[in-house]
Length: 128
Image (cartoon, rainbow, N blue to C red; front, side):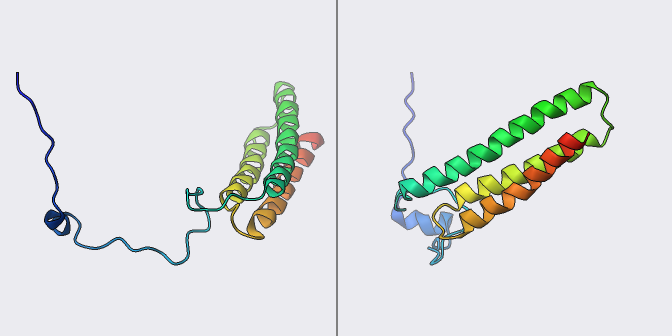
């Protein structure tokens, strides 16, 4: 039986493997997952964002259920892709808001921008 020992990388070998030092950005990315060093966002802020997103999500569920009924009744071919695009655009903006939770106003702008596409999807669903 043979034993395999892992090779150890010495500090002198690191420049050969990695010829440059990783840079630390002064300004972190706007859309990123929080790290351990980030302060926790306020409870009220997260609760308000979650409540607003829950309203958007419930509206999306209603649109989806109505779309199923409309498709079963014989909706035109463009109907379902149009609803899907509007809904996915709204969901993408809401996800971006949660990824930017450490910014001051950007999450609220993104959540406000997520409402018109969802409202458009609702109006499209109801109109058919």
